[in-house]
Image 1 (cartoon, helix red, strand yellow):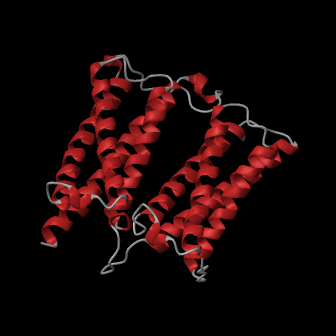
Image 2 (cartoon, helix red, strand yellow; image 1 turned 90 degrees about the vertical axis):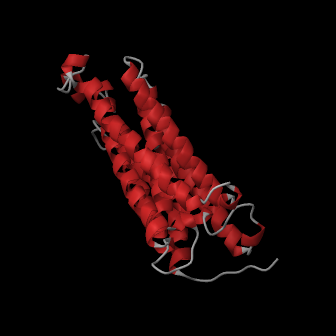
Length: 293
């Protein structure tokens, strides 16, 4: 089997991401002394990113793109975007849980500083890979390499982070309006994930309706749903008339990680972020249907 090695900025960027993510999880396992599940999540982010990047490099090294069971126009950039978001989340969560309040010059602290630094470097490398792989105007590329495709990745990732915050402890059982917000998050996540899978599997032509028009209609629906959730979630979590609290509890300042109020605020912010992402997606999708037509 012939080995195909073409030196390019994309290859060097992938090798850098491979090295940085490998160092991050290796040092974390070796000497960072991570005590609870949050550390396991961070290690998963780095290890998953490393394994996927290694797979992409090996497939292209041996010229197996045509034999891969997925669309190679869509898979590498989709994975790189998810890896960038995973490493970014780990770069935020890890110091929040394992460096905040840790003083002294112990070796554990030094290990954790190294892990944080290489996690940030891996994030920059993956963002660079996405930037290099992204489709340019007039360039023929897969849907996932376009703006709407990358927005779908961000939308599903933000929804996953919302699910983490609302599930431990459960934040949506106090009122039916909050259950409605949870339904919005689930519906939009499932449909966006389905679109990504259809593109990676090259199954969009199997749909009984035009795929671009479906994207436009779904983006409009998602904007309406997320707009309602962006309004409802803060009202039923922070308005005293509905049992909420506008002020952050004093005990949150000394608590490691995020307290209950912080998690509710994080969900409110992330809901607004996803609303903006879906609005941008709607603008892109509308241009795709009507301007191109």
